[in-house]
Length: 50
Length: 351
Image 1 (cartoon, helix red, strand yellow):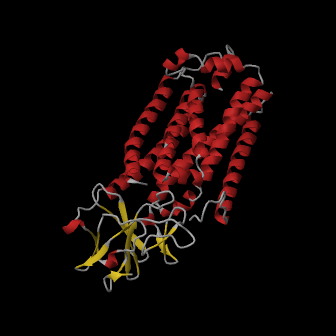
Image 2: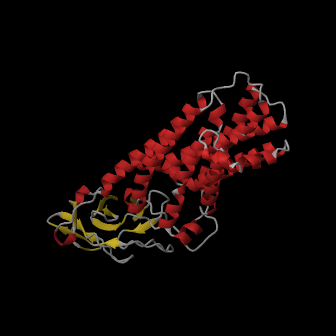
Image 3: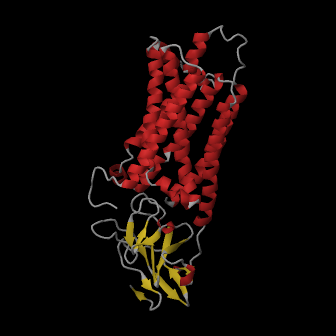
């Protein structure tokens, strides 16, 4: 790799790591609680999952 | 090396690499479907399509994780270099596996006459302003588009056409694609699958890849600091015996590109550290059969003038070297590619 590629690589990975780890942590933290009765809206839930 | 353009250059190593790759992918997908069906057999066609969707999706994510780990692993430990040799085929196969995952999603809606629901979900603009509820399929589609672009330009024709620096820059888009895939999973499968398996695997995979890249980058930064030039702008490399025989010491002027100073017995020569093929780290290779050999794909160059041996045509920039007070020195100003510059440290003359 050229010096320019290494410079981009060095700058990019810390930013990407922080953004994705933060995003995944937030997605885990904010995910809705499981429905009490899963049979309420089976089709809607299934479609959302695909 | 290249001797004119040939559509495909297969060799035994590539065939073995591809054979193992295909077998591993078939084993994973077959095993995933068999085990998942054994645990909870689908009772209709959409159920089977869903199973295929999950098998190919997890396989593509795993392949992407491995591909992104190969680069830094090979930088940190040369034993991983064989994995790097045919990594482009690995990437192309990953695109096809991911494409089957995407197609399965479309098919799942199609067999239930629910394609309008898919279109409605993708065009629900207010949902794009939300975090939970974001149309996560678009993240996967964006990643798939990047994989398509990289697979389509993976051939050596495009490498030569775009030039290695541009090609390498383009293929660094893969890092972004991996981030998109991680968020695709986090906002999709992880939202309604309450099992801890998905978040644990996702975080472990991404954290491992990120850590490997950060560790490798830290080591690279050390090599980029460079050595302040001395009198006349020459850089001290060290005594001849400090350069391992049939290998190199890599030096750089501050802010400059790296230079690989090789020793072959009493001969010492300096070449750019950038292989003409993919800008691989030539100085981490060895001298094999009298030629400097790139550790990535085996491209070879003569030490004395940086030219590939006939009939090959690649040529590298060389650098002046001299022996001064028992110390090998290199001038960081490159000579025109192919200029003879290696010296015999016994006599101090050009070889």
